[in-house]
Image (cartoon, rainbow, N blue to C red):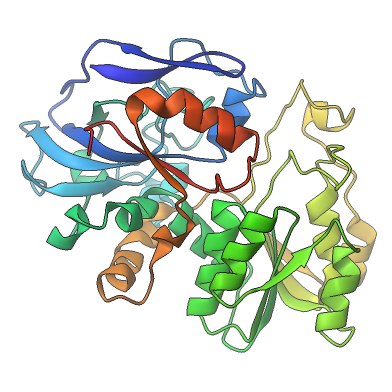
Length: 382
């Protein structure tokens, strides 16, 4: 089969690799019809992780079931399915509690919790930027989609990661109807957090970024764009909240946050949130942070540490929740919102490309080129 293979920093190639296949009775084999390039893929693309060469990338996947193992009971050949990026068994202690991002069965390393497709440090599982994908524990991991999903794939494929992750951020931040919410980052996840806050009837949703195309997308759904290259985002949030600060804050950037001058500061958005969220406010963090980052220009963060404004955080009585989204906790209800026309996450999609143009998609998305806000690949040629 053809697949997108990681060959080193900023080097990915579409090549022939061994076919994905059923390996265990609980496996499902999926023909991939849509698979997204995610901002998290860029950490590996840029060489900031220990991603092994030869690995197949891609953790935002959907497609049609073409084969099932003998132990699969619920999923059927011909089903169109969307796959959570985090691979779960469905029966371990964490999965039973709905914490599927921290599955205890799927990691190979016994000191780890959680696994994902085509992701550094998250197990040996190949990604879905390929013609076919092996799905372990198919009954647990396949969300069977309504028939209309065949014609609305750019909506439904977002259930694999970014829509549930944006929703998860608002859950961590405890967003309630009537809240004022500030979101740092207008990439796909930040935009989904803005959509999620709006769906939860937030009174005011403010989105901080500096890329005009991304801020324009935020404005399209009624969010207030805040350009941090023009003035302090903290001052702008305070002005919009009568000096009180936002009730809730969402961090959707992660450890490669940059200031407007282009200098990387892994603590930038976290500290800005402490300053721009009110006393006793809550913060959700879904931007990726890693235990070690040898490539970081920040001395502390090479060891996964940051200079955090903890004194002010404590003094303001704030609280924070963080970590990967437990996609299965949300994907079915978010699927219903799409089916009923209450949510259309595809509004962020800028480009749909065949698999052989994936290297081009990575190059433009990584460069944050104007207009390249979300790329969907179609390995089946659709």
